[in-house]
Image (cartoon, rainbow, N blue to C red):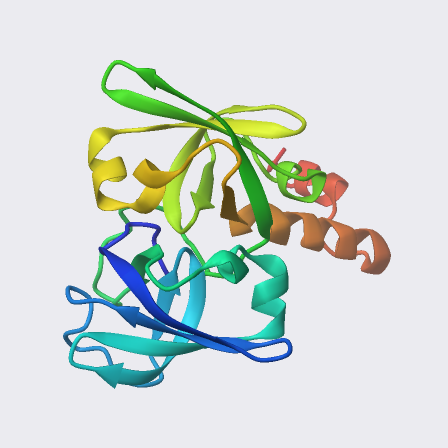
Length: 213
């Protein structure tokens, strides 16, 4: 489990690709103390397992599913990536609950300045947009952001200077792909409501009868 607060920008040093899967070697420094083989690290928002450690970096395996669902296929030696260790039990939720399981890929469609902030408009498929709500949370390349506006095919976020400085959002250009993870709450609620219609479990009428709607 992650929070979407990026700890360090790492650099991809090696990419190995097989027929459908592969591995990444990533140079890092800040996040390495205390990290062990088997730990989880979010790389551009993707929860990956550390398979090897060195003095100045770590290695992770990448599955076929991850290549299909994210922008990891576009990483090359020299690519910079957002890094976040899994949240410690005594940590603070500075962002929101992020699982590291990418829902899909969006595309930066517009970027503009607004005094000290920078706006990003991101086009996303319907399967993503159905869970995007104004003033809700979304993870963009692993960065926890607040949705300022949501349409049917796009959403907008406003990014403060500190967030741009600490993440690779400052490097994004129009047309760049970004990993997107919806807030998990909406997906679980939808699933429970669907199950309720079939099994007589949680339904809108049941919630209304008990004062929840």
